[in-house]
Length: 89
Length: 452
Image 1 (cartoon, each protein chain N blue to C red):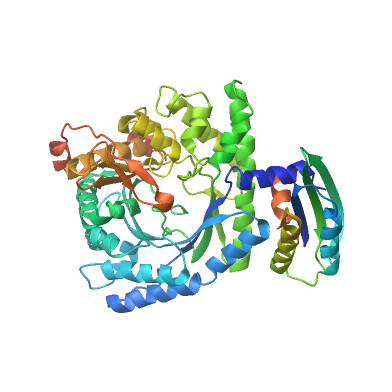
Image 2: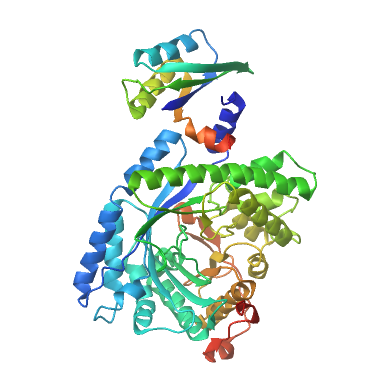
């Protein structure tokens, strides 16, 4: 299953590194990264494949949410399907 | 590949504009549950409901977490009880309502609909027992919702049932007076009721439905309001187009949730209901959409035209986004469940008569309106008849959910809590209709029923 990871919060050193490491630890493969800084706010979207992940989606959501809290950003993981069905016919 | 702005657009709709799936409602047929012994019948329906819907809440929560979209309610609707309970040798169906309530509690669903009778032409013995049981059933249960269909375009209006329902609404208010007549918030009187409506309090699983079905009601007044903010001052062509595009996106989410729920529960997908359903939360109001179009306060001249455009554009946008569209599919205009409607009543811009006009162009009817406790049964019946006439002649669903709150008068306020919200008591025309309602009989089906 493909997932969309959205990260929003105050910019700081190491956000990409922390999130990528957390995903790599559970064998989630990052397919695409898109990131910008707007008004000092860090916005990032990662699309990743969790077909070979060692965690369930629910556990991954919890793990990344904890990582986000430790670095002061909000991390959300959703199935890619909700975006595809809304924006692609 | 998805673009970053698309992903943030979806999440902004959910987080800031309160996009949600209002309800996943599982319709369950009780047609095999009949028994002459009401105790056996109640056990049969309890078992049927709790077995069929046992995974409903868990699956709903899984989908919610996986897609990051709130699913506010998971609910159950059943075959009209008057149809299936008539086999019982009983003079009251209150125990049936209690069995439904217990089943809903066991499942963890907040409402169960289907304590229903369909009497658009005439009543059977079971229909009369059910209708007479409504006040006590609603007073003794928490989750049970009741509805009665008193007319259709094909049959006309059963004015005996209309008269009876005025009395039933009054009695329900009296029996639940301690909670500001909350029983009446769970009772809908329909003309042209639909068989696959997922929204309470009027949901039931029609007799033409299969063994079970998943029906989904989407929402999103806040998303439409936000989209219209970006086209302020522009023509209605642009307004309609903006609503259509937004409704399409909202409905796609409903379609995804419905197909996932259907797959995971092993239940056939029924319909997506395209209604815009408000909540009392700020930013989730249909009235505020109308005001965004340029109406100073909902109810001012222009409101009906604004609502007609909104209702039509939502349908056009949603239609292509869903596999099957059904239910009520239109903008809801309840008072107590919409912060903008409440404010409009308090400002004096919105009256019962204007609401009646608005119901000509949208779903569904005079909804969640608190009226003075001394409103007579025949006046309530006459309001029901007026609303039914609009539905019958215009070949659409109309409904009445009026709450005559005992001991309250115009200027007072009632608070139901939760999604049911709060409401100022609205004025009712004080001229009498007693002789009109006393006539009884049936208003014949209109000319437009003869379409064959």
